[in-house]
Structure formats: structure tokens, C-alpha cells
Image 1 (cartoon, one colour):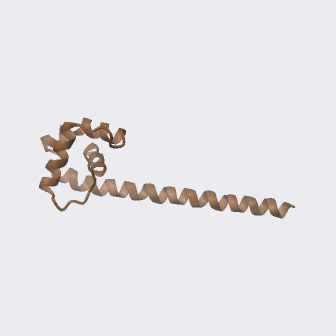
Image 2 (spheres, rainbow, N blue to C red):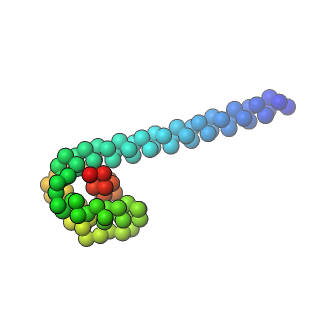
Image 3 (cartoon, rainbow, N blue to C red):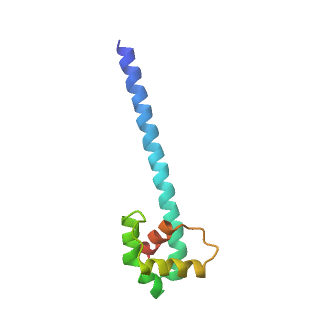
Length: 101
């Protein structure tokens, strides 16, 4: 009887470990993406008025999971993509990078 409980506890332990590991991997990937985007945008746009003025809109965009799109953010996204057409970042990644500048 004790061996069944021990096996159940072991199985639960492995499943919790797998869930924690996938969470860590996902968060690490997201952090690395934001860090890479921030490096590109901060070195290029840290003194750019259009990008600086978009910070409040970028915060609203990120906090609302993309539901709130302000005019300043739209202008900054177009501005950044116009200056760096090869940049392969979605709106959320760029908004997060604007916040980090």
C-alpha cells in the first residue's frame, strides 16, 4: 500500500517539475526577446521625441494586452518600422521595448 502512495507522490513531483520547467523556459524566452528588442530600440531611439511621447500609450497597450492603441503609440510603431524596416518585431514587443527605454 505504501508503494502506491510513494509512486503517486513521485509522479506528482515529476509533473510539477515539468510544469515549472516549461514556465521558466517560456519566461526566459520572453525576457530574452524583450531584452533583444530593447537593445535595438534603445540604442537607436532613446532620444527620439516620437518614441518618447509614446510611453504612456505603450503602457496602456501592454497593460490591456493590446486592446488599447493610442495615437502616439501608432505613430511610434510606424516611425520605428520606417527607420528599421528589417526589424521583425510585433507591436507588443515594440511597445514593451518603448517602455524599457
